[in-house]
Length: 182
Image (cartoon, rainbow, N blue to C red; front, side, top):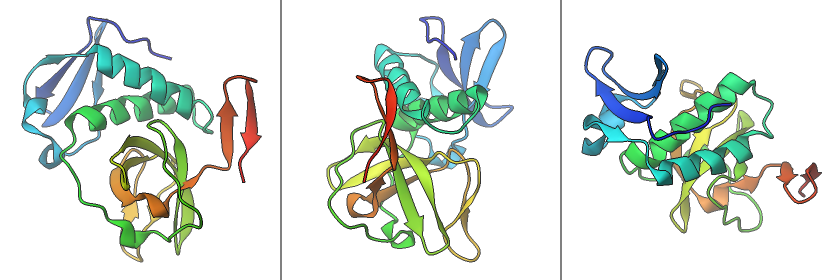
């Protein structure tokens, strides 16, 4: 897994028309967020901050429980950090998802499930704004929202918290084991 350092920097590559993260050693990560969804700060060269590194750690711990390869986990984590810092605010699009029993107030970095009439997939909570959370699709398979619209890996969406359910398998850092949550 990657380790953040003070040489990392965010920049917008006009040739690629994408936000990039320079990881040093001739390694560059292309962020999956479309240009139209980026805030103005994304177009200015910016160092990878202490807050970015803290989120990187939080998200890395969370995604370690997912059935993803190391490179895919790193991709999800870096896109989540970029979304937290550079994604334009979104309005909730909760209508795609079914309301869940109980009230969930997920912490940043929680793995939650969102369920449509077509299936259920894992999402990473990037930010919780009280009654709604910005979540990133954390499953490699596409999730159908409607007959014609799908969410792809690393795509972000904001939903009301009453649509979230904690992922059935949560990692307990105290015991070092996975525990089923019901």
